[in-house]
Image (cartoon, rainbow, N blue to C red):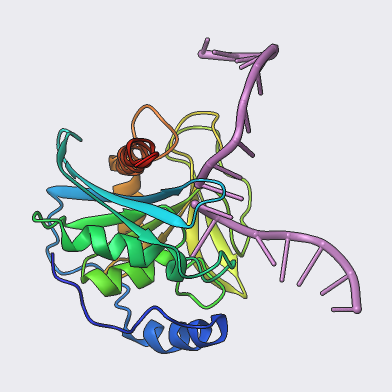
Length: 228
DNA sequence: GCGACAG
DNA sequence: ATCTTGTCGC
């Protein structure tokens, strides 16, 4: 699939922060009118302890059956360190390579990380959605910023995530009596739609099937690339 | 200055 | 993210 030319990746953390402040102005925090979700994709990366190579992958699922219809992966040398708040600069170079190899366009892409639930409202899902030109959602396993009140123990229970007086996302219980996931819109998305979609692609496990498939894919790719 | 801190 | 054994619970 096509990439939207945004910028290079050889940046300092300082430059990355400045870029986030610029790029966030381009975000559209509402879904395209009449959005029909027939294909949902997940993205993830994997790496080994002392290695500097990252493996990135995307898996597109049929939204009705949740069966994979396309898988792509790539391996790239890591350029950027892990800095809380700047995760996209570490993960998107590899994911871009994988995206370029994809020949099926998903209607929505779910990232393993935050969307607007970010100190500058520009998490991985926002950056990725903008770069790939696709509606996107952030679905993280833990919070980066903000907090939320209690939520019911049943699947479907939610609680607003607030930060600096703003509602930036939603804690969502995807399974009864299991820790919630943290959902926030990325690009071309709003919070209610993001929550609805995450629940739609989550069934037997805490995390969306998209994320689980992508996670398995990149780990398989890394294991089979090991030693070569 | 002190802690918190997606993956 | 990754490194790892056992263990609690449905």
